[in-house]
Image 1 (cartoon, rainbow, N blue to C red):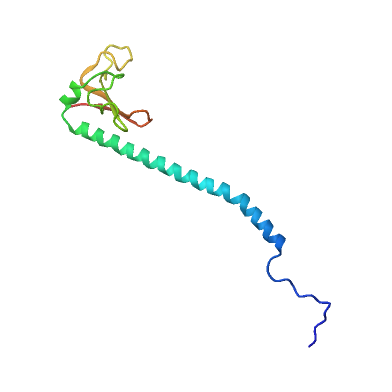
Image 2: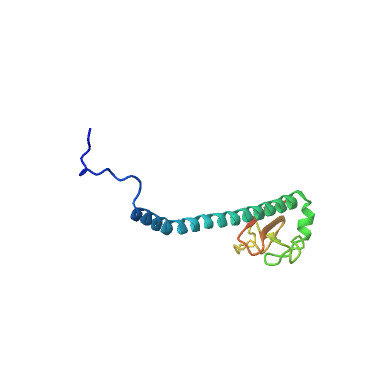
Length: 141
C-alpha cells in the first residue's frame, strides 16, 4: 500500500488562529461572569445581615410581649417618640420601641385611632433604626 503524496493528511489539533480567537472570546466573557458572581456574593452578605437584624427585632418583640403589661403601659411615649424600652443611642442595629394608647372603639367618632384612647389596649411598634424592618402590633393585658 503506497500513499499518494498529493493526498494530504487531515490536520491534528488546533491552528494558531483558532487558539487566538478562543482566547479573545474567553477574555471577553470571563470579566462579566466574575462580576455577576461578585454581585451575588455581596447580595448574600446583605441578606445575612438583614436576617440577623430581623432575628434581633423578633427577639426583642418576644421579650416585651412576655413581660408584664404594666411595663409597657408605663413606657408609653407616643407614636413619634421612642420609649425608654428602646436601645440606647449608638447601639449597633438599635431597636426603637414606640408605644402609644389606641382608640379601638372610635367612641369619639373621629376615625383617628390615636385620639380618645381606650384603657388596656396599646399600639406598639418595634423597628431597627435606619432600616425598613419593623413590627406593628396591638397589646392587651
